[in-house]
Length: 473
Image 1: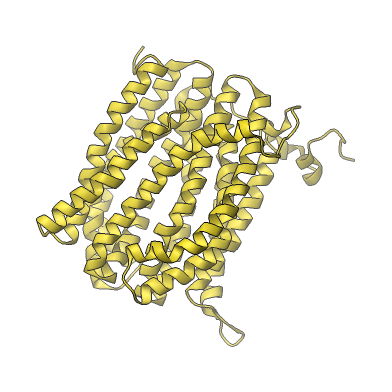
Image 2: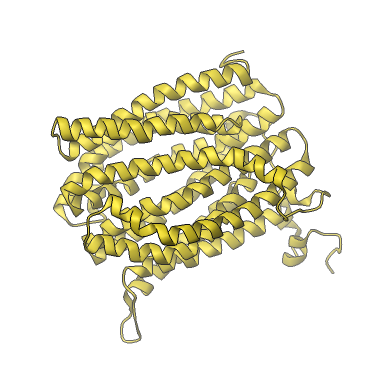
């Protein structure tokens, strides 16, 4: 018989080891490098499957047509507005819960976690409604009238049903991440990948002689089903975690104090991600004059680039909870050590990635399309962008550092410059003034990212002096 005093998840599963797998990891003691290995590896593996998930979508869209592939590319930029709020809530809860755990205030950590879940549910409903009406106008910015815009709009109307799943799962995973649990999302992402792998062809093409497929929209339906499964699993893991085990009562009814605190931490990150999406809009605004092949090449190239960046994403994702807990515990030397370790290791990894992109770019593009123009333009993009992979990693590390110190507003200022003002100005310069074609788009992006890093270093140094006494002891 199960113990009546056991946590709900223990009674549901009947397994005490489920409880043990969800224990918080104390990131304020032990080797920093060891914590990076424990957190970054499962996170990177999970992100491999998330990226492969998107690769599967891109592959099947390419089997349908170049217009379908271009429609997938533009719809991703629009849906990214919704995802931005998920990223913001993830970072906010990771930082707030992590700091509370570092301060040994378990009751406050539980209150923040409960309010964060409530926040994500409310936000997802509001954003889904707004997205339904705003989609046609946003797509008009990044596309010309025609088959690929129509495909993108149809796809997005279906995908909006999955918006709550994305937002709630992102928020709940922030609570797990603050406790050093990167394994739960890894497992969910692996399961979602295989689910998507099976559902995509079934929903797109159907079963010959049995049932017909629904075409391009089958990709969106597959995403809605698989991501709902991710949300359910991650919520289950949250309610099995140490944060929810504290004797403090769970309070899900919205409380102004906590919602305001989460908002202050989440909104700058949300807007930073929206500004990042704006950079995509700017890119596609200039690319659309070169035709659907250029738009499709950018969409496919992004997927390939994400695969190369995955080890760096794992490192910078692990940095946030490590810094948050140690900042809460007042261990500033460990905060500095974690940031430097992340930057040095990430740059070395990305230098290897740059070499891979330069040598294998056309072959990587050919996996997803047989259109020679898409392959040519995509390889051009990957070879230019490959040179700035180390710059991306340092930028992402500084963003995680600032979020963990609860100073996300600085990431917003850098984002507005790098992904808004600088991208538009430099791309316009190379495309319109120097008439460099698609190559000018890639050069403009590279220069915007590089100058953005300079600004980011200046601002983060100021934060370091005020919050942890500078970069060095």
